[in-house]
Image (cartoon, rainbow, N blue to C red; front, side, top):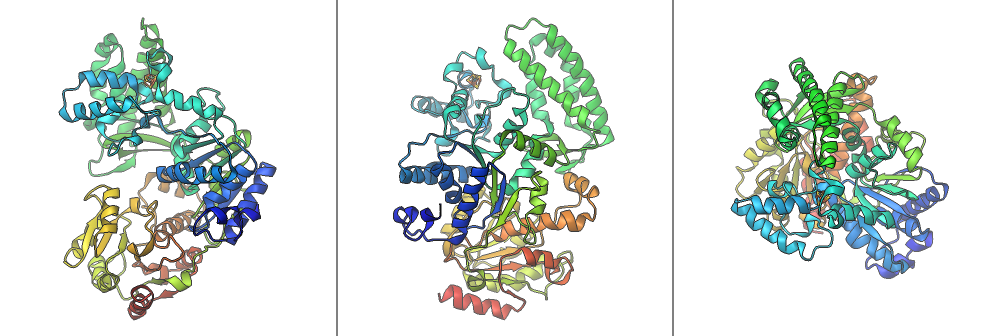
Length: 615
Ligand code: SF4
């Protein structure tokens, strides 16, 4: 395995600018050995190690069938379009690779033809005409092939392959259905690319042997694994939204709609739920529990009526009975002590969730039974030089673990500035005085700064104060899509991009376009977050054993935006002086990259002058 990665090895001969990296070689060797033993493995490999090649090479070399699951579509496309074709070419192998996405990414022909004939909205008509032409040549029916089309667009949602509308084998388009054809192709694929949501939902139904899509493989790679446990919690829970309830009602046979119209009018009126209108999320209260009790009684009666009704479309009838059963399962879980029940506003709809508090045992059993050789990897998994916190959360406590050092020289190329003469993060005037304190650093660097906030409130406040400096081009989350803001950030001079958590990860800006990352405060979870507070209440010494590790991982994600390449240079600023002054600060420092920390602004300006301006 080592030979492939050496200075004169296969990769170096075919990839321009390839450099030998000991961490990458070791990672590939560990993976190769885990595949031979069919054992689980957990690896932290920082940006720059080249982890995709480190797992692809052993898989190709050993001719193994694999599933690779990612958290982001960006990585999925990178693997599909660049990394896998390159390795196939090097090995001269005709490897069959398939991407399988969630159903919302595929066009449903049945819904499309219905909607196209029905709509008289101009925008939808234009879009559907464009899609008509696309149908003529698309092989996959994947909306990502159409430029500027988003799967969250309401016009696209009306025509996607959502399972709630699918009539399966009874559909006149079943044979040519894009989603079902994609599923079929996976059966013979050598490498299947999926996202964590799809992988976990498939894993969950494996034991029931009902509807599982993904075939058995030799090895599973979970890349961007830091997201895995959260997604598993959602996938192993039960949830429903008022939008789903409305869709369900509208699909009922006409006579049942008439019979239950009053109950449903009552049920999906938000006002009846007595929610706190200003909150984005909260625990399910006694008032709402009463609502769900009525929901359960209504739906139980409805199921009996559905079973009796003479409905020609069996597939639809079964689908409705199954979904009605899911609503009842949801209600039954509300007082289950192993779950936390809460609501949140999601995609502009009210969503209710029951989330299991611990998914480790279930994951452990499923991996042992179906995928004993699973490799978890990410740039951000360790806390204080250990992977135990992560491994415990996914039930693989005994899996082998490796933490590879960064290949970047943080000591030489970066500096962490923690100002200690600004107010505490909770004090009045924190934002205003912080801005006054750091603005000359930002100006000296020439913008090129990400200001990562822990709340939308701080995003607004920092934006308000920074916009007073006319020489800076202040870009603010919400004033355009994230992708649009990032493009502007790269193209326009003196840019400062201010954002909350959606900018803390998955953003990859290399080179001098991004030379400074500022963190407003240590990213502790909000105590009123329902899942966090419930989990905390069950963990001994939860601040140390749960809150700090989560915050450390989040901080590492945010800081990871700055150095993406070995030649990148830049300054980190943490405006929360608790990292310096509180006892728990050492846990953060211990987990960060090996870098120099300073508290004097003069040293920062000197570093910028020497390393960034004059380099
Ligand atoms: S099989 Fe289902 S998803 Fe496919 S076209 Fe028919 S209704 Fe749509």
